[in-house]
Image (tube, rainbow, N blue to C red; front, side):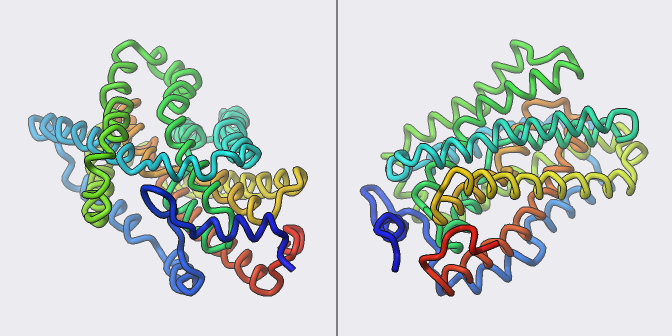
Length: 364
């Protein structure tokens, strides 16, 4: 028998709200969505192809300056669209689940930074400092939105709470990520965040985001009708940043400093961070007595890092020559989190199908 609270949350996951519908993946589509997530993400393949292109044909001179202007404009457009897609109705639908948000946001902005700082300190003297810095930047980033909600829905979790947590994470990340980066990364690189850096963050990230959100009464219908176009703009902006970043890094001698061994260490440390994040979010959820639906939302919102927000933020925060290697850990972590979370979502869904009233511990 399903507890009343669980049934209410389950029904709420597909309930129509004023101004839109909470994103839900029907159970019948779960078997289609999960195998795709287990394969290599086509966007990761496009990212790798962009890195290869920048390695062979890096942009330089006047072309590089033109690309920098185009990239800055693309970043501003990207954050405008992020703001325009943020639904206040969806946030209000799950805003009352404060315990979920506290645990998920705590994992994103406390647990991850702590892990990154510990790993950087422990790796001093034997790990490439660029890798350690890139992993630390990864740990400062907000959670994903789309995949957190999708996996929560597939696993039969608390979707409205996941929408709220993931959206709040991205909104807070516009402020928290640059602050943490300035305190623990930029301070050791070139004196911390300067006044011009603050202006760049405000002009390229915060103002477009706010403008996009305020434009929702006028742009919401258009964006709903042209979701594929919005997705293409989203990914095109990231590819532009990656191309210009790796071009500058290659010209500065990136591949003479970044070896295959460095890539192997990056993969291993990314895997360690993801495993610790998944274990900790699951353990704390159960220690706090959360329901299975709430645990699912915490695990998927608290263990992910956003490529869509991270790459443009890095483009604003770091100098061009340093940007390329700084985002390598994030690119690898992105694919890894999709594959691992697909398996976990499948286990949650199978456990729910076998026994809808089971406690979270029964999934282990």
